[in-house]
Image 1 (cartoon, rainbow, N blue to C red):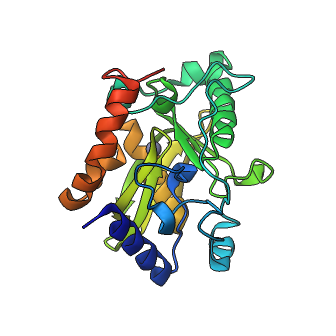
Image 2: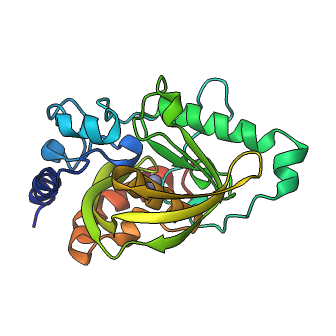
Length: 254
Ligand SMILES: [Zn+2]
């Protein structure tokens, strides 16, 4: 199966399921070797047409822009690390109450991560993706910085229950530019986490938000979405992965 058919298949499936066709991290593909991305489900790209209206209803307005690499984002010292950067595979430390209460470092990091995420046209970002190996994630299902009420910042999140039901959607990742692939995940999850004040919370996430959460949560365990591709899909993206290794080196780029 070629990349093209694969992506098309993903698009059709996503549409039929009435689920998001936007990728995590807004992954919109740029023109790439997988140029075929035309159907690409996922991307918020307008190149391949508007995202269906139902998505706006479900997710509060999916992004329509393309993924970009903003480099070092103004007002931050952060940039997104790319595969195969070792930070993507390193262990991520729990954030302590002291860290939250005795300085603003984590709060400032979360704010900066949101800035980077928006600059990259993403919908979610985990700390290891900016080279910080701590258990912190941020996301906004709308990908729209003006919709800041939809921003979520989670410290030390844990999944305490998974739905038996699964669905498959095409995902991408800002640390893997210009590629994507279908990933099967639980339809809903129950999560326990802390907020920036160190307060515990529990919440159930469904649909697009559950998918974003699970993608970002994987990053905190050193897992990336290519680990969840079927062998067939993985083989279709392997040439792009090889390119990324060449482009960013074995150590990736910070
Ligand atoms: Zn990712």
